[in-house]
Amino acid sequence: DSSNRIELWLGTEYHENGSVYDYLQNHTITIPIMINMMFTIANGLFYLHISIEATNGKPALAHRDLKTKNILVKKDLSCCIADLGLAVSEVRPKNSDLRNNNNNNKERIVIDVKPHHRVGTIRYMAPEILDKTLNEQIFESYKATDLYALGLVFWEILRRCHTTTADNDADEYKLPYQDVLPNNPTFEQMHEVVCIKKIRPESSPRWENNSTFCNIFTSCQELWTEKPECRPSSYIIKEKLRNQQNQ
Image 1: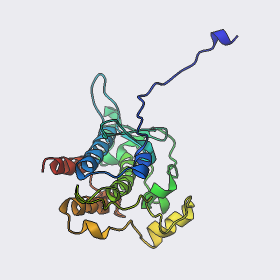
Image 2 (image 1 turned 60 degrees about the vertical axis):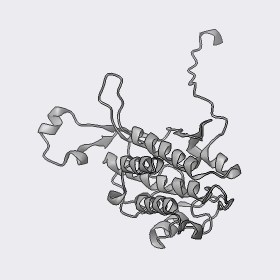
Image 3 (image 1 turned 120 degrees about the horizontal axis):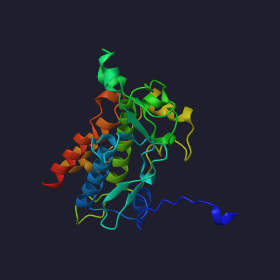
């Protein structure tokens, strides 16, 4: 009897601008808008990455599929991270486990699902996923893959920003690695480009004389570095962007 059927619905806020990917296809942006977009993305990732110990708290989460298609643009052009279907949460050891284990605490924090590191969008996969060196048992490893993807997202946004309000000099929209890979690259093709050839997205000549562009591109380079432990945290990135907003 269909009248006894229970349906579960999830209601989410509608954002008519669509995703960052959609928005950048059809719009260029100014520096203040760019910085606000990046700040709200970094702030959202920071919120995901931290645990909140409270009655209405939450565990730390790693997204695992961060890309411009999974970030929505609000009416005020701030951004919010969406599609947590592949996210994993941090599972902290109990106090008794801590007393019985002398290893570093970070190394005892694991994830809540069966390890499977080859998930997400191939184009945005971090080097440690592509070369299969990701430590699947440490939650921090998954946060680091989000940070790599964040660098690629920032690069996409950076290209669509005008150098000055008077210049209509934004670059055409491109996906990361678009010049060296097909539309739907294979895992093996991505591995060759990122891990073997060590290619990363390039700077644009027009950024070189603009300190804001240079600073953000430097952050991109730090985020997509090959060594996950060297990538700046989402907190560091959001604070850098907050400082840019205040200048």
